[in-house]
Image 1 (cartoon, helix red, strand yellow):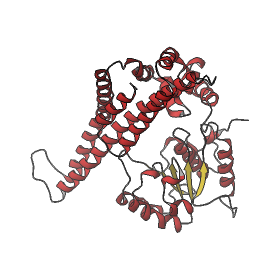
Image 2: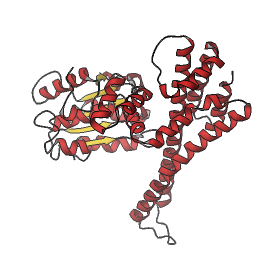
Image 3: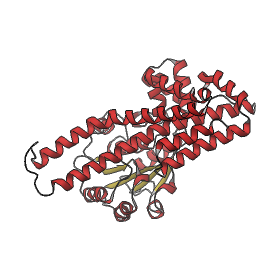
Image 4: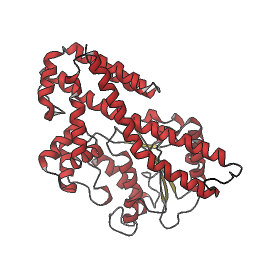
Length: 384
């Protein structure tokens, strides 16, 4: 099948989705039924939900349906088009106050383009109140306004919102398709591109990150070596502490500069000097900022830990594949020796028990359990 071009070029393995959006773009200026004012993009992590929404938004602004080169496509692809608004969050949720601001702006006419497009990249993080505030805008949109919501699954958004949106389901791209993209677009060596495409399990962004960053590949190798290293209870506790400490450090490296910049902006906005008096309302603004920053730090640390858990799940999957002699290709072919070793140490039943321990850890973290305690319990499950 011919690969899409223009703004659609990065949508790997999503030919049916591209056809759907191209049909909508073609009918956008007429009375065709392909176009609607609310879209819901769903699919597994890394399938390109937000990329699809951005490409669609760019194509709607383009007079040639998404050529990728014109004065509309270029800023749209760069994220600087004035009529395309990207809504996401570094925190755990998107609140009603923030959504109400975007709902008000959605009623405005486009400044330069043909449509006012608002893309909520983390629609699964909308609070109930935020979802209710968004609902009316989706039910009664302005004539030239389009809402695009992105979420892992349709069940991650409220029933009322998804019933008023056109659903677009993206599929997991094949390893070959991702490897081809890395070679053609990023100039990655074919052997590395193939290995990292397999390791990413269909996550295009992660495959690209691993392929371009030797440090990321080294961290992944260290994660995959954890099961072999767990010989005692002490080893389990040490491994859990290392994973937790690294996640905390990575969150700190990102959040500390961002926190400092945001604090400086807040002080400048309120005209606050280092040792001067605080105007009324400043304390509340400072408290709200600190809460948002704490939520962001917590989310980033949790997401980092979740990445480790997903790598460990893929390792266990490979172990079970070897134990059951399925003949299926390994996700982590570069760790084949360790996988073979654990396939001899564990039984298929204990491997499944280890998988349950990892899944249980993910559920505990989602329920706001203490990360270190959840990790310690999971590591102990590796010694079944």
